[in-house]
Image 1 (cartoon, rainbow, N blue to C red):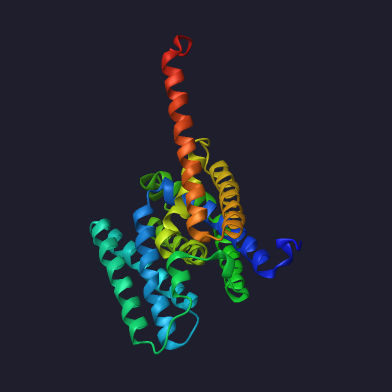
Image 2: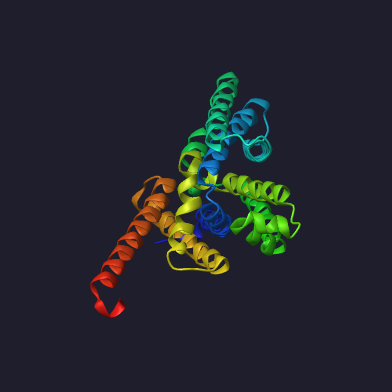
Length: 277
């Protein structure tokens, strides 16, 4: 029997899962702590507009997704910071506009868009080498920026008023963080698709938050959780011949459910133990 590791597509899938786990572990931590989950959902769905434009204009849809994601993230950030608009309203509007633009461009494109289903629901087993290169470049950019700006991000994430006292440009830092969220969303689209991207971005970080009190530790554990669920999902989807994106998310959701059960049992044990009073 030929080992599945002998297949290039499977090795590419594992590498894509590793790259996605590193970025979603780091950026997902900020998303969970700073409560940017809904905004990330708006960015991911707005990216569909760039995918549709890519098909219509004849260039790589991933590049279109990057452009639309960045524009939508920065647009929501600037309007919410300066105009003090309700962010949930902005998210709903950009969410719908991005999807509508994508549908319009795809309907105007002659022929059939063969990769459209994978962009919506993900298929890590079919990630091409070209997308791997883009993912690797984005991953390096994100990691370098986070390392360089870690202390600044930390201050702005937990206490914006204190950051202003320290003369930290909170608006610029926030927009930079939103840009990193947008780039991470684009990376995850190829893995689990637009529909499921928020789960992979937030579940590993939510799991690690239950066991870590420091941001760095939370990031590290989140990366390892991401590697666990993506690798497990890839192997399971291959052997069971089921969609990879959905399998990855179900493993992550199941693990999060076990964590919540364990936390509840821990709390109940603490309450009934008089020695802990």
